[in-house]
Image 1: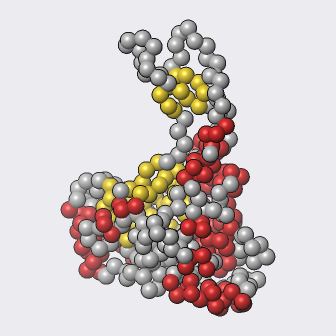
Image 2 (image 1 turned 90 degrees about the horizontal axis):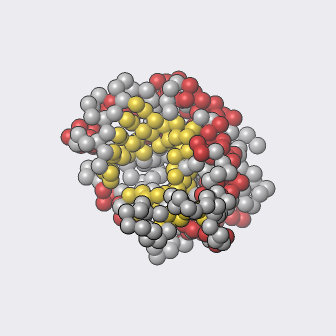
Image 3 (image 1 turned 180 degrees about the horizontal axis):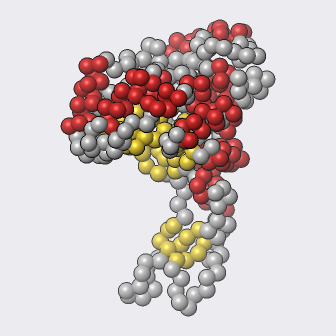
Length: 373
């Protein structure tokens, strides 16, 4: 079925065949709390005959979203605590977030800003508040990079977005502007020549970070949209969220990362699911994520390896939480010897580094079968 408009209500989802009519009443309660929007490009990817469809799981509302666990919070990564002026988040010394808008072309069911975005979320920055945000960037010479997020910054018109990017690029100490978006995947037709030109301000390098979580999202139209950006000289990175029932198996995750690389998009972050309200049914555990990353290493090309990260609550920032392959191997054998380590190789065998001159390079016999648990 061809769908020509964005679906925004459970009744529209039912009319489009994405949910059964008997689910509409339950889903209305979810839609009243969290925004719903499924673009035609995403609706076309959903298989309504598959109750476990990984695309539907990301975008179709679920009554499980009404269950909030005690550890979940409306601002799970502490944006507000690190916001000196409206629209700016200054969490790390050399970079800031600039949140121009709080609307998106689609709404993810796991969004960590779900309490802030949507038609009834926080407003778009007014001209005066945008001026104040830009003044903050100008006043802080340590800011090397400005990251446009939100909401999805590419939902703005090319003219408006280009104006903001040119203003940022004219600030002497701002050398990089980065834009985080889903647009090339969810509304690929929005990647027009005007948008591409807007994303190349003179005076600063621009990067586009694409959010996608399943290889099917990289449709032919999405690949064409991404190619327009890359062919114009705009580097692309990826960010994904590890999601239960979407990409939490080795085969799917490997295919996703390889697909990014085939599209000339460098895998950047694999996020552990944040503690956003109503998202526990989509979160994995950290040990499960570490086990997946361990299985990717050595089996998938190095240029397709993302960094598995946890965004700590309260504004403390991201930390890498991938598996470790290195543990101390005990005290030096002799005074003055270098520290020695046990290193796990790709077959799960443990080796000593550096080996003592009299030792063999053969691995230490140790069962590492439990290390993935």
